[in-house]
Length: 226
Image (cartoon, rainbow, N blue to C red; front, side, top):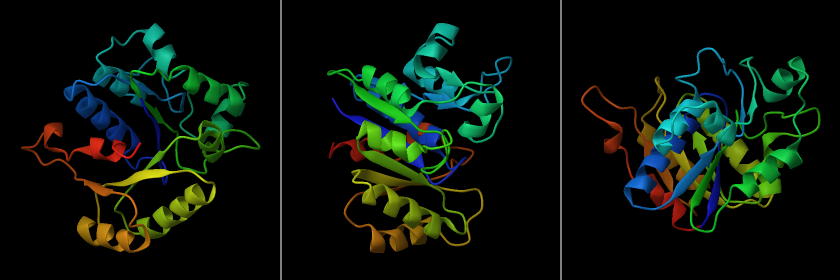
């Protein structure tokens, strides 16, 4: 079964929302799924119930125990800053090869594996490597999560160019609607399609008061080409 890496143009664009939505939709289709967020910053060990790791475990239907937390997020850091800085502050440098080996060891033949990155495509993991280096090491298709805020076109096309020019396959782009939009999300989608028309570009709207995550579009379509 396929493995896919979920990255983004930066922090807070909606990577975990996409990850948890995919988990929910894959499980509803009666398929097996596992998910990892191997590196996480801003993790408060005294208050982690709303952390990205907790949200992922909840969608996987697993108890929020330390054993389960370690299973999907073994590299956790307290400071809400870039991974290279957070790991240096704690004296625990990150090794891209070890992270990649951990992810690959969780890839099973009968289950879809989602690997959620930390920050954006080019956020540093240590003094030499970025998340992109981890993506290259894994060599799996990428779902790029982007916002719809003013400036997202440049951020998205820059990230897209880097990922494609490193030989990685793009499974699709998810536009996770931002809180503030200078133009309609549909217009952002139309513009991006002019530069990237060889894979799906899906809009993930902000939920209204009377909506639930079940109203989200089917993101599993992004997995059909894998």
